[in-house]
Length: 72
Image (tube, rainbow, N blue to C red):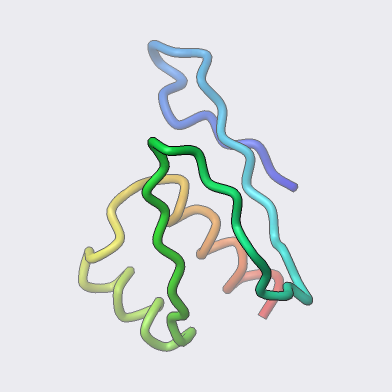
């Protein structure tokens, strides 16, 4: 698990980044206001998405770069 501070200059917000493995698809219990879509993306497609700026948020970028550097 890693902590990231995406707005360190003006906020104490922090994001938790973790790697989940051996996941099993199951039923979800979403709140009425939640609209979460889950989809599979191949590793090479993720790399391309980073290269072409399709992924822009810092938390996702840092998590993926950490994965590519240390886990894959």
